[in-house]
Length: 150
Image (tube, rainbow, N blue to C red):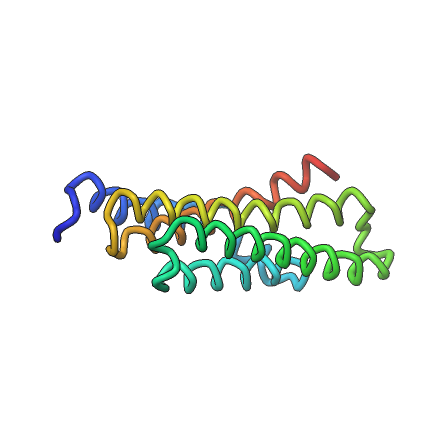
């Protein structure tokens, strides 16, 4: 089964545009900071999960995404709490909560993108491309959203 031309175009364009945005916004430099490593790890895991057979069945996929979002939020909050012990980082409780929420949202958004990609073109690579694009877009927006919170 061949994907529709619109789905193919979106599948190819979305990762390219988000990589460009991530590069342009300086996300590469931001994510060298250990406090953002849980975001990188979660994005990598979601892209890996999007290639698995579980992504084809909505009910187990949603359960996996919900559990992964909670776990990612907890890890991001723990990393931020550890970084907050050093006063030079200037991390407050609202920053810790913001990082936890944004990490969970990254996973949830990646899960939704994967599910939508699976609906558009079942069994194709487009779901993984959409997942990757959503992860990169969320990671590009995260530092800006944290600045709004802080």
